[in-house]
Length: 316
Image 1 (cartoon, rainbow, N blue to C red):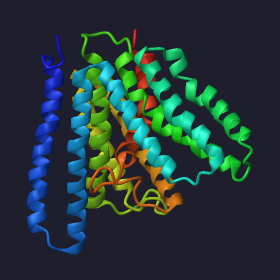
Image 2: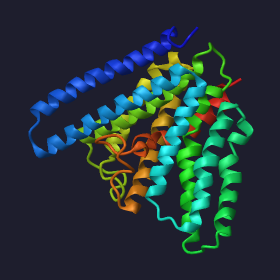
Image 3: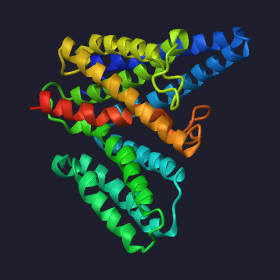
């Protein structure tokens, strides 16, 4: 059975497209009717998120439809661009250039090659163990000790977030999960859908009833009301979509809850990094709504947790 013939996958994609169409219509209506400055800012933010969602949905639909090989390439490109955004924010010196060359052109392709070949043993430890040691050595050999700890930490942290964490999304396609041949593709789409829905719903709930910021010095727009409302809503949706996963309804709800919590934590951490660097967005690739990292910050931190829990409890 091809992915296009998979009724569950078609239903997932069709539901997302229908939701985006309705959201786009509502956004257009609000743009025409809302006139206050604060209201316009909120509506513009929502419409920017909707446009970004269209782009992200197209990318992920393409990833699950075209097959594992092209999916791995798409996520490898996404990691490359995200790492570029991350490193651009950090001060670098000539002594970092060779280490950065290895990060971009050797380590990133190698990590995704391991995903493609399903070499789990090395995939899971390459960057956190071997690469972290190697890059510190490579930077030290350059002989530049000024801000050495900060520079090596930035390079290694960028690789962990942008490459290692993100690579766990296409790695879902290599898990030996019982079921038909498309269960892994549905699982990857389910993961992205729940995390991104939680992100959007937290924003909507926060703007509607949010009063108490979780971490006001980092992201005053992230409120406890938004977190509870958004995470709760996304968890219910995730539980209702159990039929597209290898999980039972309660298991799907627990996994969805974990995804919403990790997604929120990821967004908070990435906001803290932006505050530290004094920038609003990581880039400008997605018109009106920042760069790649601004859109996948939640996915980065949720992906490895979801992958390893699924592998431990549900893989053969």
